[in-house]
Length: 471
Ligand code: ADP
Image 1 (cartoon, helix red, strand yellow):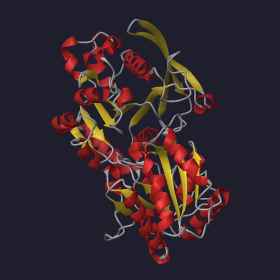
Image 2 (tube, protein in one colour; image 1 turned 180 degrees about the vertical axis):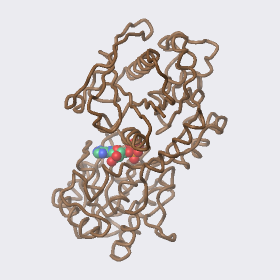
Image 3 (spheres, rainbow, N blue to C red; image 1 turned 30 degrees about the vertical axis):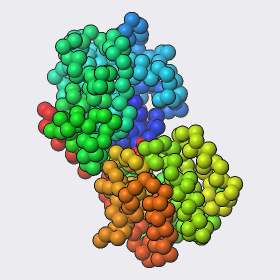
Image 4 (tube, helix red, strand yellow; image 1 turned 90 degrees about the vertical axis):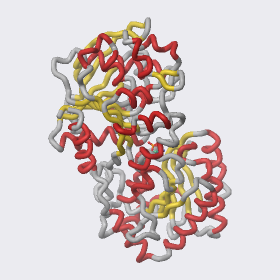
């Protein structure tokens, strides 16, 4: 099959979170399974752009409301990522360094989607599936079906994957003029709660809708920022497919960011060496269990409870555990962590920012990974942690619930708790510190979870079946 993935992120070109990881890996494994998979994304000004070879594939023009714009589609020439990669450039809108966070994000991503359908309508052949990811691409299924100029695309089946339903891309009806001439009778297919809602529109218009875990799909029916009824109504076409992880990038035996590699057999010694190097760098004691947090410092991740939870755990364990936090996000949370560095010297440290290399070293060197998330559609961190023999300490929600089994259960290897609260995190850290003393148990859990198969191969089959159901 020929599958066109449309996304705002794709690792290693541009990544802000899990979406980038998924769109960087799924197409690669679809190609390995015999499909033709292509990725189309905006041409941000990132390092990858300047370090690789490109050819111009197409030049076109369209309108965003009254604003006429020209766009260029470029293609990476060497198939470096294992799939065809196309970037769409629109001067003045997409020529930025960051993926998100600009005042005109609505205009940027709407114009990107218009350029995409405009370009696709010039193709002589038709792909088998257009697979859109998250709200930045959520207007594509609507435009393919109900914009008069793109009528030609209306028979191509579409799939929409929700990586995070917290962000929906709502815009006022005054912006409906951005959408190229469309069938006004279909206004309801754009609307949710009196606004144009790209996420809701995609749920209504796509042939199939998926989320990145089964539990998250269930959760959306009772907690999705006001869209609960829509998910209930559309449940017939919605399903959950758990993300895989890219075992070629995330392999402690070959990881290019690590100096000390290890395997299932050598996990105890290998992790200890990685831990020592981390602890030396951050002034922590490698003899104590090391807890890490890696992620966005936002409410969804319950990051704001961590400063108090960590202080409380340091107090309760009498300084028997060390903590290292990597992340960026809400200023007051960043500040709270920074304020802890001096008073808790030797027990706590933090790096505020985004650091891919350090994140790999932390998965490899840590004993425990903290994830108290309020919302976790799939969560990749816990799967990376498992692959690197790091015990996940997670709240039972979404994908965390689907992938982590508490060590109290048969074949359990992680720690689960129910509430995103200081006391639950503190209590779970206490459980972790106790089990850390039992070296044989730790080794058994590590070796067990390192061998769990979270590879993309089986996930690819599930997507293929879904695509086939639409043919
Ligand atoms: P989300 O997409 O909600 O942020 P996921 O768990 O799906 O969460 O994916 C997070 C990805 O982003 C993981 O690959 C994680 O290692 C990475 N990541 C998050 N924050 C940072 C950071 N500050 N530095 C390096 N990598 C990070």
